[in-house]
Image 1: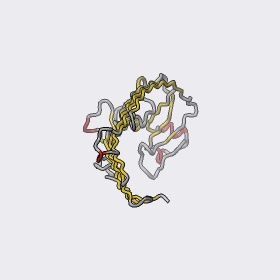
Image 2 (image 1 turned 120 degrees about the vertical axis):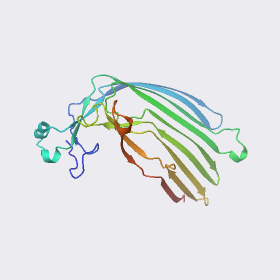
Image 3 (image 1 turned 90 degrees about the vertical axis):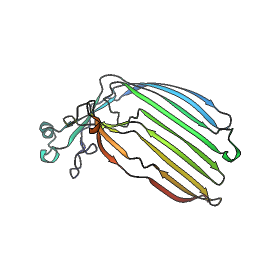
Image 4 (image 1 turned 120 degrees about the horizontal axis):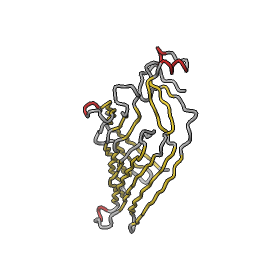
Length: 252
């Protein structure tokens, strides 16, 4: 058993955790296919798909701590009574994951001389859960994509990168809360823009600038179930702004 930090309030990351000693290991059978095409010079286009059949997959359950549970483990109700209890179990049915991905990278040969050294790239991955989707899918992202352009010259380089992350499940909400029993925490979809630039000062040194989240997109967390109205879904927002990293690097 892992006890929470009693000096901090209850939260998804501050719970009573009971390890299920009788849980079985999960097993999976996977099939993957991939087709690749290589462009002359620099470049590649690939398309892939996969299917994974999982048995005894891990599920998680979160419940409010009851007086009976606290008494069983000799926990003081006045101290631990407000903390939820989390444990694991094996899903009774099979779970199947299916998905596909496309990846593209190319240095177009038709660019004029002043644009040589330019590469474009893009990739997208989509996946879904079939069967019992109540398992431990924290961090599961149904759709993710990135695309951008890079320019490399003897004097320096510049890279612009767009990163999209679809709606992501973050964890189950405790049974008995004000939300319905099918409610989960979710990370809202977001699109980040990153800029990476480098200017060579000498043969051994270079000045670099990395800008993370250039468009200052906040990170929103929602909590909802099937019947939760849209206006009641937002749980919290993290607005960390953009992250700048500036420095000089050298090779000697």
